[in-house]
Length: 285
Image (cartoon, rainbow, N blue to C red; front, side, top):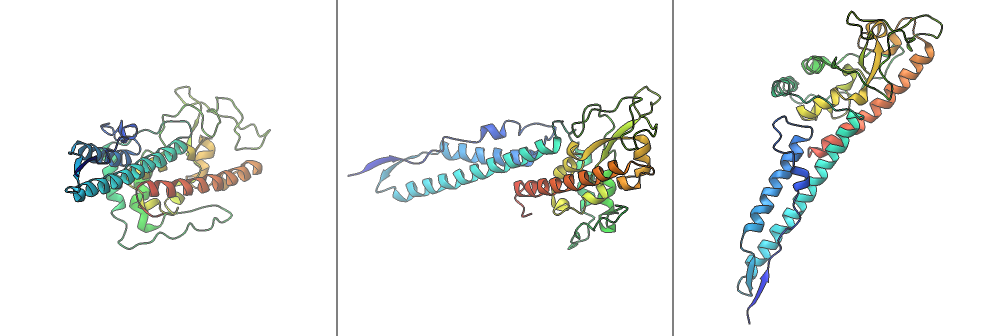
């Protein structure tokens, strides 16, 4: 006697992940969202196929239909996990702030710069930080480093960084000893003479494990992460010269020590986030 059975229809798709996949501005995790959207289309196509089978004459078709359903279930779960891993990493990189989205020209320049890394080149481990804490990017990564530095950090910040509000004109400069009289100056437009500064310098960021293997989008967001920015006075920033707090002449020793601790802490966090982003891109950290 023949029996009619319904093959496995995949009821739970990935629409919650793919809602922004059509965003023309290429938001964070766009590749992961596109992957989820591709899986959803395959699921929809699978569910649209005839899925009532007469057994035993259609046993092979029934089995094949269900095997495909299992494969798509696994692909759906993997796509969702990759998107969530990327989204969570981006949230931590943002530290409560949005990161400006890259345009296609910026991504193309990053892609071209990364393409200039010699084939087979292996980025060495970050060099030990000497007393002066000065680090230079490897010459093999010079093009990438220069591209990452372009208009970075952005100049349009005004809110908090590292849970610290932007200093006001006349505030004591925390980089210098109490009682030194060094205060935050005023720009010609009346704004305080401070700017965002990278805690882990970009010259050191390119050494972090896996950074150069990130997609151009991820490299862009990691290099501009508010989680790696702090407010610094123009005087301290100029003395630092994109290297380390230890280069700030006349700096408060307690401030220098706290900056070293902060740099080490943020570097560890960035290393972890890079590893998580690589996994979300389907790469081995």
